[in-house]
Amino acid sequence: MKSILITGCNRGLGLGIVKHLLNDRNPPKNVIATCRNIEKATELRQLAESNKTLRILTLDVTRIETFDAFSKDVQSIVGDSGLNVLFNNAGYSPKSTRISAVRPEQLLDTFSINTVGPIMLTKALLPTLKQAAAVNESLPLSSAKAAVVNMSSILGSIALNTDGGLYPYRCSKAAINMATKSLSVDLKDQGILVTCIHPGWVQTDMGGSKAPLSVDTSCSGIASLVKSLEEKHHGKFFQYDGQELQW
Ligand code: NDP
Image (cartoon, rainbow, N blue to C red; front, side, top):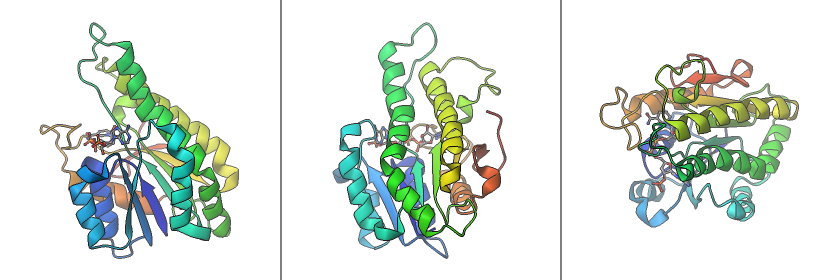
């Protein structure tokens, strides 16, 4: 894997994945980390100052009108090698979403960030992903060739939903799971692997302090899973530790 782009990297899991990739024994040539507000991304900026591998780009995944210009910036970083991995990580989960309290704007905002953004960003970056797949034509499906990884959640699993509620979040993640499956069908012939990952329940702003997993443990698993992606992961749903999950 020469290049990877990860969204939502100023905090939480995005920042953790960036750190693991940079500290890898065999780091990618380009780690492109996006955030909404570069001024506030202090830790990410500090990392970039001491590491030329890391490039920071500004991106709000709901601002689809900016994606054309954004993909040109990505193309100018990765050049003719193309982009090997797009990791749609940025996400959102609103509070108070029981059936008695849920509001339409919570559903729409959450879909916009967790579902519409990743699908449209994948569409915008397809030319550079295809370029990476073509350059590495002789390789089997893998992250060394070309891959799209969507950050999902076990809360998006229909089979594993025993607690109900969380309408915006659960529905948006079930929808990104479906998008993952459709993309896996559509992009296989073009040599692009597509998968989705549940990071575990992790101690971030979203996961909260009661979560059992540290960012480090989850991101260590995610980083090694991303590096080892192969045909068996294509069009499927995996946990950070490599265990397959039911849709
Ligand atoms: P955090 O709340 O800690 O971080 C969310 C990240 O997404 C931030 O960088 C945030 O940026 C970014 N983001 C939110 N809205 C947008 C937007 N419109 N455009 C661009 N970036 C945006 O969450 P986590 O790190 O925990 O979550 C990362 C991913 O993992 C999400 O997809 C989440 O659903 C998933 N996940 C997390 C679990 C957990 O237990 N933590 C469990 C299962 C899944 P900003 O700082 O600007 O708001």
